[in-house]
Length: 280
Image 1 (cartoon, rainbow, N blue to C red):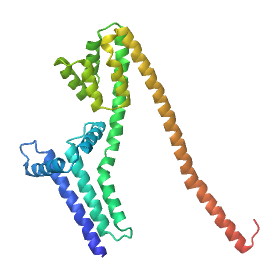
Image 2 (image 1 turned 45 degrees about the vertical axis):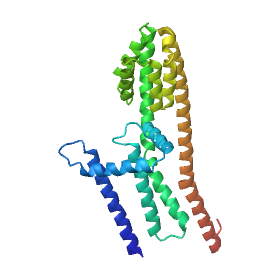
Image 3 (image 1 turned 180 degrees about the vertical axis):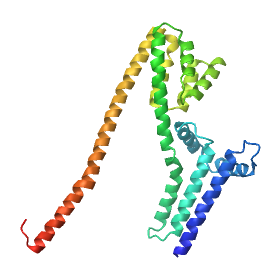
Image 4 (image 1 turned 120 degrees about the vertical axis):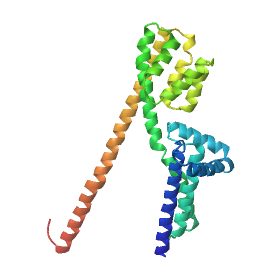
């Protein structure tokens, strides 16, 4: 029985390795020196899965999750859903070949866990992208406020600052610039950027900038100052909460790994002393 289990696990790893090779072939398909057959085959399977098995509502939700994780190399909705299906199938097969007593509930649990595993991998890039966006927004505010206080033109100053500061929002800035120069209003271009980057600080900044045409530079500088003060207060509350959580985790670690062993050791010494009738 265990021989079959080991063979099944080895075969699963081999299949996973083959899928990784196919994905590598797809990533290098743009290079003319690399043959495109492997990438095209895998892309065909992913597109078929996305066309016939992926619901529209779930596809839009996956698109939001990918946007929240930032610009991932070659990640699409079809590719992510295909990874979910493959990981869910691996979980079902692994739970079926392993000796277990949970019945079909355990098999379904392993399949669901495998299906959700690619989504768990997006959590760390999403947190990193959110931090980069917060840093970019703070840098924008630190430059916009003194420039607008100097009575400079709002729109030209805004796009000049957006283009000059490096960060993870350069692609959105280029898209907004192209849309604005093509005749689209600044309000619509900013609102489309919010739909692609739903980070709290960026949304608050866009809500202030959308009314920039109605006010002068001095008043806009005051509104941006208020926004910066709110962001500072929110950052201080976040920092205090992180410190409190770290102290709480440290307390439980000390309690678990120091006091609990001391209590267990003291109880064992007490029991040994009572057996030997030795006075403490």
